[in-house]
Length: 227
Image (tube, rainbow, N blue to C red; front, side):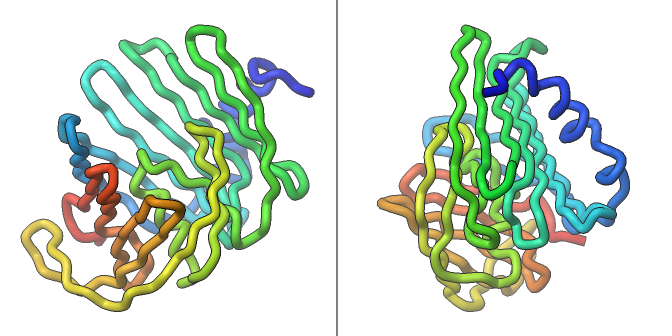
């Protein structure tokens, strides 16, 4: 089995810097969320989601909090099925956590390492259109959950915990919400797995406006409406 440190250089080039087939694209959504979490300072998550020339979709995100910087890059197919993923945590400029994922056939390999030389690798089965990679730290990734207005069973791979969960996605209809002092109508979705409910609201184009995880005291709200 290929060791984590041997695949890092390749994925850093293809995922972060962009392989030639992913170099150009059309922006689907771009903006920032203001994030509040019980017992933690307010954070800002900036992100960009683009449809690439290869018809894949790439989502990048970044959170800065004090000396720590979190960055991610997720590439999926048109159904939201993950193809590759890179997640980095840097503290005072030094990398303290790295998570890599890459798809091969009908399986996704997930590798993680930290600055204490701890490494792990897991594999997960992929069901096209049903398996999604979702990190609750990053609100923008919920865009792929509502992609195509799907509902029903969702298989979620949690990259930081290395766990696979099965959740149920339910559409709850149109509701009024407030973004940047303006009242708008959005579609409410609920994604429930175990005792965790992820409530989120999207506009008519599927762009995420608000995310709430009540059990974690988590709420992410767009700074302003999408343009």
